[in-house]
Length: 295
Length: 272
Image 1 (cartoon, each protein chain N blue to C red):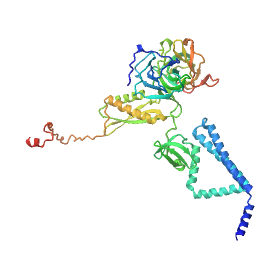
Image 2: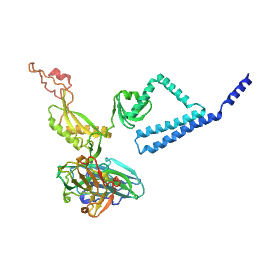
Image 3: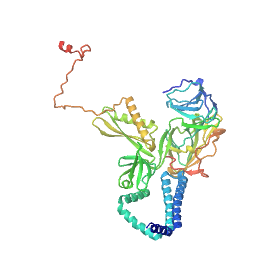
Image 4: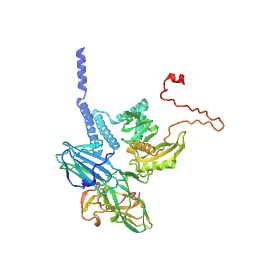
């Protein structure tokens, strides 16, 4: 029994064309090594000449292209007919497509993203309330790094379907600050003071010019919109600096920033509110229970 | 706010490109433009501190003095490892790295088919170099420059520095300061209609800096030719300085080189 098994095993191993399989394996390994070298080389070449986005795209393209060439060469070496393989691949694609619709959808969405290019690697984007820097654009998803250093993966399909805001597409941005002042204040004076502030500030651009609008009569304040332009890479710092400067200026000029409050007005037809004046307690009597009894 | 205890009488004039020598523990203090600078040499490191002065304080001289006292500890400090054993320190001027939009306080009209030369003073940056090899430590603007946007829309254009000027037509009327470089700008209006000069874009990164015998800084002249449209003027940076600058030596080369053979080139949005 054992002898029979041994002889059949020997026959099987003897029948395998080892040299063919070794050269196939060698081609595959060579393909991976060469593809890595080629991708690294092209990446180094493009680093100083192109954007990060394009460098990553071309690097990936070169890697997969070289790998595909060696993969098909290896299949041929192994004795597979390329026509059959391609036919099988077509059937396989359909099967995979049905089996994993989400992945296929993400892959196709990824292609659209590459062609449409709504953002590049390094841009700050906002998707469904998540803001972050684009770290990579991959086959199935886009990875973001949020300002608080979280790694967020967003499927490509989501990016195609929803609203994406690219915050670093243009070099300058407008910042709108809402400033509320008391009803008693002179609006024109505050407007001039705010525009002076924009002129003096190093973060606010001279052109396009800053402007001030009165946006509404709020319950407690006159609401004003103070808009100024600043470089996109200094938005957070600029916004904070300007808000501090506005607060300081309003304090120095004695202009009141009201907080929400409610005034009770009885109207002309109603009786005035009864107001009772109390005599202030003397310090000696304060907290002394006997003082009340004696008084 | 840290105030200087020095008086102009006890201080000397500072100069660009001069090698100052400090002993470890000494500090060189400067007052120029709207900036105070402290450069301190310690056994193993250089320390640079700077602070802005009020803008209304109009100075004319660059004052400097070497002291043995350390600067105020409240000032922000930048530390640099000593590149070598050398105790030398010197300062070089540099033009801005971004183009500068020059805006005359009062717009100037250049009549049809005529030309004029205006003299523009631009803010300089200070390059601090230390050691016997003159290793670059840092660079700082001598006042806070304001930024502006030059472009057809808010999508296309470039960020530039902005500077107001009196656009003086007489050279003698231009105040000469050690921290300002004078650029003669010749504007030729070849159009059949007047040209209202409200602002124009001076390509400061293309200008080299030269010092004359009086210590004044000059850049080569710039010629702007406006033939048809205000937005498509041509600009040329001259090779030589104007004769009025006198004998000059090169202090700092231009940050960027002009296009090869392209002395005259179309420069988008020269007049904003």
